Length: 468
Image (cartoon, rainbow, N blue to C red; front, side, top):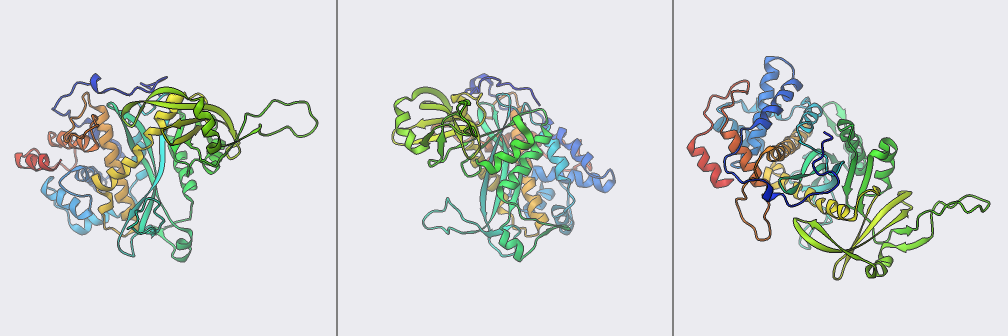
C-alpha cells in the first residue's frame, strides 16, 4: 500500500497516456472481492448463500435500470439473476445487525491500487444532509441546512452523515472513494428517545469525535502510511488536531481553510535570556483578513491544476503560528480578482502548488455525496429500522468504491457518454456503465449458488444502453 506513482509531484493530465478502447475487461475486481466476503460469513451453507446475496446486492445497486430501494433490489434478483427470494427473507437479510461490515470494509480497502498520493493517504472529511419524510426514520432530526435556498426550509427533517473518503487520482481525474461513514444524532433527541442498533444503545458523539474514531480506524488499516486530512474550516480545528496528533504523532497532518478572523502570530522567537517564562508565540501579525491586502502586493504567479483545468494563480505563502493548533503551519493566500482564500496545513513539506491542488480536490467529496444520493440512489430508500438504514448506506458506499476501483484497474479510460462543455474527463456514470458491462460479459460461475439465467441477453443490453 506504500507504492506511490505520484511521489514528489502530483501529476494531472493523464488522458492522453491511456489509449481509449470500447471493450471492457473481465470483472476481476468483483471476483477478488468475493473471496474475503465469503471468509467474513460463517462457513456453512447458509453463510455461503448470504455471501452470494451480498455480492448480488452490490451488482443490483450498480444496475442503472433500478434505484437502490430494497424492493427494486429484490426485483433485480428475479429479473436479472433468476434468483427468486421470499420478500420477508430478503428484507431480514438487508436489516440484519450481524453483517460483518468491519471485516468487509478492510477487505475492500486492500483492493485499492496504490492508495497513496505524493507519499501519503489523502482523506477528505465532510458531512451531508439527507432530507427524509416520515417520523420513524432512523437518525432523522431537524438539522440546520446551511446550503438551503430562500424558498427552502432551514431546518429540514433529515439525516446527517459524517463521511470520510479517499482522494485518489483515477485515469487523469480526481475521485473520492467512500471509506467509512456514520450517522450523527442530536444529543437532546437521544436523551429523549434512546436508540438501539440491535442490542447496542447509541451513545452521543459530536461530529468531531466521530471523525476522530473513523480516522483512527483508517490509520490502523493503513499502518505504514502517513495521513493528510483535507477538510473545510468547520472540521479543521484543535478538536480534530489534538487527539489525532497525540495518537498518531508525525503520521497525521491537516490541510484546511483558515477562517478570516483567525489571529496569526509570527514564528516563536528563540530564547532571549530574559528572566521568566519564555514566549509561546511570536509577534502578533493580525488576522487573515487584515493581512490579505498587504500580501496581495507581494504575491507571485504559479501554475496549478485546479478543478480539472490548468490555471495561473496569484499566491503568497508564509510559515506562521496558530494559537488554536499550538504549532507552526504554512498558510497560502490565493487571490482572485476581487476575493481571496487562505489555506493552511501542518505539513510544512508540502509545496504551494500541492496545497492548492489537494485542497481543490476536496470538492470531490461533494461530488461523492451527489453520486451516493442520486446516481446510486441511497437517498431513495424508505427503510426505517436502524440496522436497515445503516446497511443500506454501507451497501451504497461499497458499490461506489468498487466502481472506482474497477475503473482504476482498467488499462484504458472509460469513454464519456454525455459530452459537457469544459469537461474532458469521464464521469462516475461512465465508470458505472463499464462496471455493469463487464458484469454482463461474465457467466457468474464463481458465485455460489450459481446463477442460472444467462445474463448477456440482447434485450437487457439494449435496456442498459438506453439508461446507462
